[in-house]
Image (cartoon, rainbow, N blue to C red; front, side, top):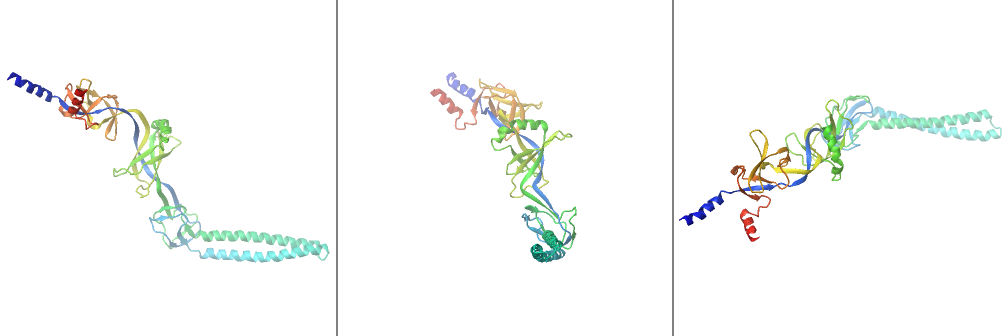
Length: 372
């Protein structure tokens, strides 16, 4: 009976050894982000203003629509400007006809003065009259050009391409060239800028790593919208303000984002994640392997070389994806328990199974050791 019970006792002893899933810690290179707040701004903004006085005759766009640079937006009544143009054109034609006559007279008198057919004074007067008439032609040409420009200004055109907002005037309104109120505002929404602020001390770290990051296409920036959703496109850091705000000790960073669907609108509040440095020796631990004790300190259970459970106090700085960034407490090669932590306690002997090798069970590993 004693012999029969011995294998059973041994089997029970073996069953007391718990199996746990472990994650082997490896040092790796990780990009570290800073979460900052920012505002969306249009890449280009232009106010539409009249350049001549007059009555708005027509509005030729739909509010909130896309407009192209040079597109006619408003038509100012052109009647008085058309009359000024016609008058300048008539004066030019009259001056041109006069200058032809005076030129022929001056040439004829220049020939007659040699034969003493006319006096030198008459020849000089004819030449002077010709030059005055030629100057009048140039003057009327300039007046015609000015009248043409004013007539063209009665068509208020879009200075840039983009999305136009609400019109501040309707047909029948009187507008002036010197007014301060814009008729409408055009904003370019693709691409857009996101202006974010960062402390000057963090900016110094960013500059130290910027050359390395630029080799990979620039400093990447991602943003979260006001509803908590992540904007699907990644932006790039474009520039940094050249001065530090003395009251806050911060600088403004500007990122550029493609915005084909106009999801980002000027003035929108966002959270920006800016990659500010690279940790070449980062230790990442799965969140399920890190817990808090009664003092609030972060702790981890690891399997030592004797397959015993050991507790470590670690320093968890920030969350990166599904992992904690560990600054101290874990090292290269440590076996962190991530599965079965509730079944074991410090000092227990366990069977550790690497969760990164799911096809290799503890029994298979033991058979391989026997074969060796």
